[in-house]
Image 1 (tube, helix red, strand yellow):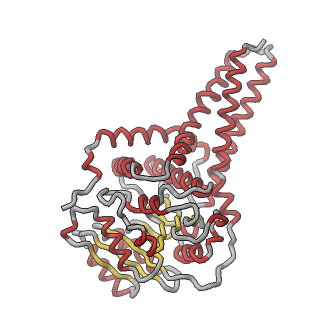
Image 2 (cartoon, rainbow, N blue to C red; image 1 turned 30 degrees about the vertical axis):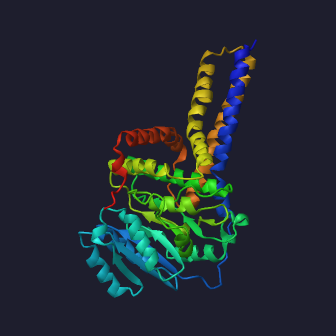
Image 3 (cartoon, rainbow, N blue to C red; image 1 turned 60 degrees about the vertical axis):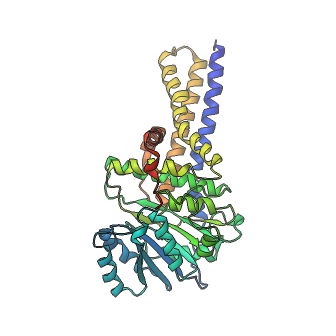
Length: 405
């Protein structure tokens, strides 16, 4: 005889499993979109592009990465580097590269602006100095994964039909590209930061693919139409914040009908590895402050919350009860053995589907694959975010802002 509470527990297990399977299958949404993209070469004339980089004491990074941006297989483009009061060899590096590359220019932020949000000022100067209608934003410690990076961006601009959410696009004013960290080692920090960035990019892209405006963006690979930037006031929102300039710019200007996704692996931007655990923690804390200023983010945050807790719900409502059930079940209790066998099969299906969907999407985006270890990192996500929220709560408010003088 099966006790009544067992049926209640079984119903809860099935509800949790169904929700978890929906999120597991959704991991493959981007991968399926990548497979559906038209691989044919675009033959019409492509628009010229301006690449803007805000740099501060970034001489080694510019020396290493900037030539790869300047040697793109693209006809008409320029690269503008805005020096934010560097005290190292940044100016010398730029001047030497300018002698070699005619399409490289550099400018600088005024010394009197040191106490203002310098990154926003630098990017604004870059936008105003840009000769071309479309501006691509990236960072000095980044490099394109291929020589076709700018070509892929230009193709999306002139032909939004190459974007997976093309039926909803009127015209592209914002193009969101994919970025990842270098993957030269398998250190614990590299695995953490790589998974965290990949997971956040996938959730943001899936939100856009579902027909919503972008809530945030990866600041290493974003293209924005210059007129749209100026019409909407540039960085008027959160102009005194130290961080989150590009994320809030996209958040304030994105709509379901003007934001295109660029998912081609050839258009990926690769950023240098995070230097230390403390630096990564600081980035996450600063993002907590940035997200306070985001708009149209309620649905996105609820979806993210459900994504984060569903691995724990599977663990607590399905895996642990199954383990206990197999321990206490008697060998002659056939009905319970059949039910436990069915639930075990459902758990195996969930693990296989999620592992395959997540890792196939990661492979198609040319990212590191995590195998079944992705479950461990998913279980850690709520604690990473909780720790960031606690640090943000304990920090002084002026730590996240620049004072105007």
